[in-house]
Length: 485
Image (cartoon, rainbow, N blue to C red; front, side, top):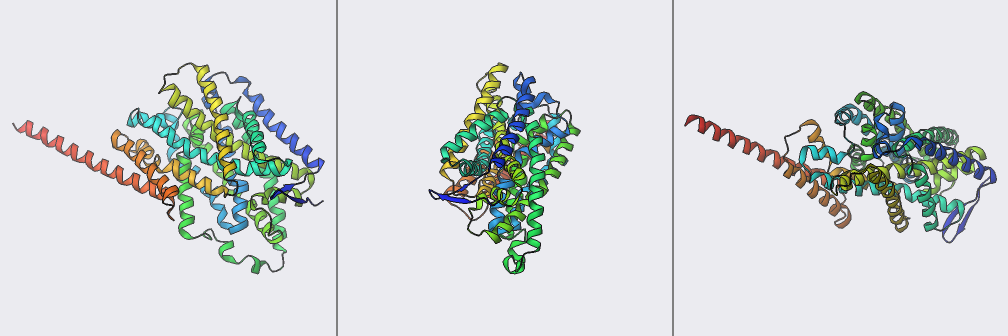
């Protein structure tokens, strides 16, 4: 059966059969219900944010991959592949590489610290000023990633139910609340694992059928010339390298992923969990690309953001299409929930707990929960105001903002503690973040704002290291003079 697209008020609408709706509803209820059921043991703030520090490899991988496989990894990848081809793979490929580097170099020292947030780690090395500052910088960047999942979520829900964007946004807020409000990290991990199974099965079945159809397509080479369609650098060499670098830096500086590392039972488990997440994430972009290229050939007038859901409904069995559509919605909801949980943890721990001295566990727990809802509301509002924007643009900008100011100071704190003085670390974080924002939003430079932030951060850190060396040399000179006298 073919699903018709009804052009209503300038938007596409997807018409679902009863089989689609029933399988979609059952899938959503089962996955979210399992997450809520797992929340029955969550009683404290630490249990909410870290799952009691008892997570194994499977739960860590589920939490990490369940968050990163959201709007960018599914709908966003298909949207970009519909326009540019294979270069859309950078999001999941770069994310996986970022998780491998996290497992190799960052997981062990971070988990061994016994902390809960990235800002807490920075405070240990650079003083109290670094904590709230890092929380604000990281939260703004993570918020933009949540926008990247709200964008397709709003459009898909609006297309399915024939509602206006603000009504679709309310549905998203309710679903995110059900997904993570009660269970926190544990609920997100359990739901994330189930969601990943659904996404993997439905996406790879869909991608396989799309690949077979492409293989038998007449005039394939004329429709899809090798460049740009089959090049990772179809958008340009520097654009591809910039996307890769921004993903690696952004992932290492994202509270949500580091929070999963902190929740591990030990440092070895944390590292293996990061590697497992990479194995899950890297291939996910490929079936979305195959689907998008097929849809580009057969439906060149479709709304790009609806490419993936429309393929599932039109070209897959009805029961599988409904499950697959539920998987996409869960990937969006789970990503928003995981990202919002990261912001909620930083707000409750680094701002309310440390800055405003709110120490009651139950109060911190509820601040975390309500922050998640507020973040989802704000991200939805931003998405409504930018409905025609590309999903991956928000993801890459998010990575640049959260990584430009924090990446180098965090790396120095882990691998060269004590070398960088607090004043230069804080200066680097502030100035580099402002420079990245100005480059992206004010000057609108053609260069990736992450590079601007990293270059400014590196310059300030270099000056700080040189000054420290001079101070040490002067101090040693004074000591030698005192000894001589």
